[in-house]
Image (cartoon, rainbow, N blue to C red):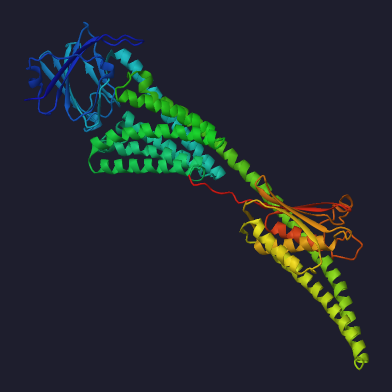
Length: 623
């Protein structure tokens, strides 16, 4: 049995450029063995094609035979038969003219020069001497055969429009490539190069799909047309550009994985095509274009609206137009919608709009990068100035410390020297000797305190940012409190009020213990003797920080008078002789080392409140 499916239809299509009325029929040869004689000698009824301009049999492994009969009388006028598919493997047209049959064999598996007319699509002259033609076609790709028959003049008008569209597209691509290469050399921004790759990938895709690549680039190497899926795969440069433009590895890692999956999918199809399985690769690469079109559009919408990345606005518009045009073209190629002038040129129109809007997106991104660089430069200058001020403050602090230390060391040393001489004079008197030894011990203790302060200040001055760790406030506080109480006399009365959260924050354990030591010491030194000392601790979460309020009911000081010097080196606010003016200075510097902050408020006879703020640990939730 020879597998025959017989079909027939009638086309009477008129538009701005009216087609020639004709009757078209087709039958399917699943054996690839039927000759024209076999086809014509059969008596089966040919079933009609409903719409020759959208004739598409999809991806099938068979040959198709068409009978074409012109229904209008023609006098001294040839007409043009056109088939708008550049990727038909084999086309054989039999012209039944007076005196015999003229056979024309062509296809994209034969040299381009073998075509009757040197045009990127398949066109044939239909002489006025006959009105019946037989056409055989087969291909491993999509058996899409949009058929029209027009007069020569009418066809020239339409073909000129098609040529103009191609010229505009490739002209815009050429100008855009040259402009972006020049911009890259001028501005040294790699995004221009990725955009150039995107443009070239689209140009290769359109050249291969429209047949102009075969027409102008490899007309004598028809075997290259067996690897058209490889040319289509050049479209992945759009994926590469999108990954770089949208910085998907940083902004949307999960979306970046989808792009990687598309790369792998296309790579597998390229390998399949190179292995010789053209029909499989060309059939499944169609799905990539559907997926990538939607992926590009979704990426632009997601990055612009969700991630609030402004340059993605023009990117979203570019791929929006491209996606819609690509979907329209692929649906027309698959026979899902009519094959008209707009659907035939949808890819070119979409690509032109894509090029324009992507260029605007690139310019917007460059502006954003430059603005970010300027912000970075300003921040760097600010940090330089801040470091200069810190260094200047350190030097001033060291200078003050050197002067103060020299004075403080001189006193105890002079006392020790004088008491040593006195000890030599009274060493025979035990009572006097005991008094002198006591004075020497006091002077040595004062000297030891000065040395300790000097070591602390020098260590603080040389310390860079501290190595922070995640801490809870309560455990460190209670250990420091226990140590503080152990150093007091048993009769000392202190009331405590304490409230803690369970928020973790970044700090240095040793620094936090030192700060609590200074705060407890200051509260005890400057307590009001007429009332028991009361220390209140309150921990709160405030705008990404864990803040500790340490307050007491001590004698306080005039904050409005001393607010500019409250954290200064050797600044004292009381006349009771207690304190050396170092505690608050140390707290301020240590808080800066762990990227925290400190502030203080005080009132005379009411007490003091010290506020310490630490950067809160934000828990990361795995997606």
